[in-house]
Length: 291
Image (cartoon, rainbow, N blue to C red; front, side):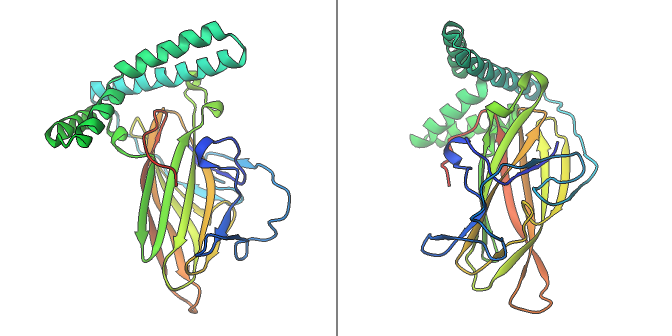
């Protein structure tokens, strides 16, 4: 289980991941990042991964020993198996369509639709959403508790938003079918991070720390310098965003962590941590809005 940094990432749907790391000012105008170098050079995609280093593009990371807590609930194990089946069906349908085997693609499409109607997590999500919309909050609470029992990860959104000391961190993740191989237990997730400095002082991002947990409860801590090979300086009322990715051996999981930063307008200023709120990595996705 590694985290992979991506300088340029194309074809990731609504996330528009083809953008490079960049900054913008309070008017929304993008501009080169302070200290980021020449952004007029041509784009190229660079993906780096290894078990113990380079979890982010262009920098080294250290990974702690993983901690595993086995799934004891039969319903949770069943959900993991169904999730794997769902991801495999989706990939098989995509392959059939590319091979112009439309009869097989249609069969798999119908199988997916039936699966989606009968799959407990998707059904409970739908029922809970309807109950909230109709203000049947007792029913919504019941559906939520059932979800918590069979699939705790499913209650976590594929996006998160947290502010620490005026520094806002927004994250959104997406499952990349084309880079995944469910039959081999390989699931590829991309995520986009937007950091906005709403404070009155310039800050610099020095280090990152990720806590990555898969659906089996296996947890890995990953530390690294900066992000995607940069230690960006973010001026007041401006921002910085980048895209990265994380492969898992299970069809769902979660990530959370923090950035270590410092104010650069004061000599020997102490560092402080900026929270990255938990977000889901899931082949099922959710109904979250894009950033």
